[in-house]
Amino acid sequence: MKFEGNEYEEDSSPGGPSTFFASGGENWAYSSTGTFLYNSDANFLAMETSVPKVSGIYQTACLAPLSLKYYSLCLRQGSFTVKLHFAEMMYSDDHNFSSLGRRFFDVSIQGKVMLKDFDISAAAGGAGKPVTREFGNVSVTDRTLEIFLYWAGRGTTAVPMRGAYGPLISGISVTPNFNVSSGLSAGAIAGIVLASCAIFVSLLVILWMRGYLGGKDDENEEFRRLGTAYFSLKQIKTATNEFNIRNKIGEGGFGPVYKGVLPDGKIIAVKQLSSKSKQGNREFVNEIGMISALQHPNLVKLYGCCIEGKVLLLVYEYMENNSLAHALFAKEDQKLRLDWPTRRRICLGIAKGLA
Image 1: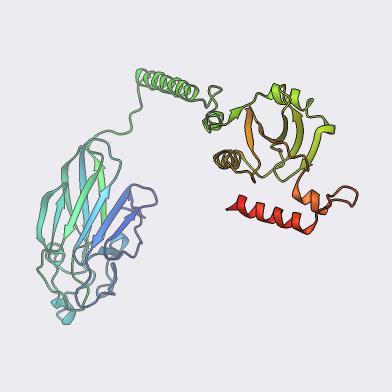
Image 2 (image 1 turned 90 degrees about the vertical axis):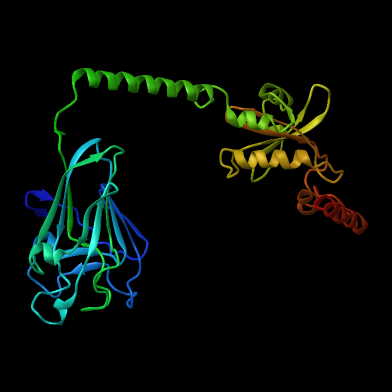
């Protein structure tokens, strides 16, 4: 709201016991404490009720049973003028029951008591009349200005209504006592640019040293730390004859599987991560770690792995009879002839492997 040449930011939060609020512009925050005596459901946002005479920012006010603490954030170091706006909106001065209410509270700024037993109606000359208090040389050294309003236990708590006492404030303005519109000098701008460039270059060097910019591959290092044998891509290509289609022995959810022969004559099965596979590097690492940690006659042996760039390969022992699914469900001329004692031994072997 524009008021008396200044633009005020609205604080329309309902408040409540132990409430903390940060403004949309992140320039203001406040905390409120306490629960109203005899009326725990009382409103923390005061509206013009008994005295509909006020206008502008005085039509609403923030109220709290014990304390209101406002923070003006991200200020420059220096001297500021703080102006507090008040108007008694909940008590009247028309000599009826609502005029019997009395409100007293204290105000501290930056930890120093500025107002003691402050009575809005008495200071303004009656209810429904605006009154301000201005403090012209408030020092800010840590970028935050604190304004603390708190009930000191005096005044009425049930007249004219329950839940109408405690500190009340309609608006706050904070104005610097120094010029904030001057621009930066050419030297300052040059210094900022040079410092920014130095920080940027330092950041690039750190990222490069940690392997994020073409240096060490942290994921590959993690793979190699698993303790399994490591094969080069050249070794795997030689063993599988450049992943020849004739050496392809299967296709799983992970990707294709190829038969290969190492220089020492050992036959291997190479499981290749497919670009279409949903299994990523994390699952790849988990599979290596899990299988390499388990050694059992009924579990396939993992000889090692290959990681070069985006190429991820697992090297297993070769199973001459392919997979159990192939043995059971392949075409009649391909599947194995398994009698029931053999099938029973297979089931027991699977159970032992799982156990």
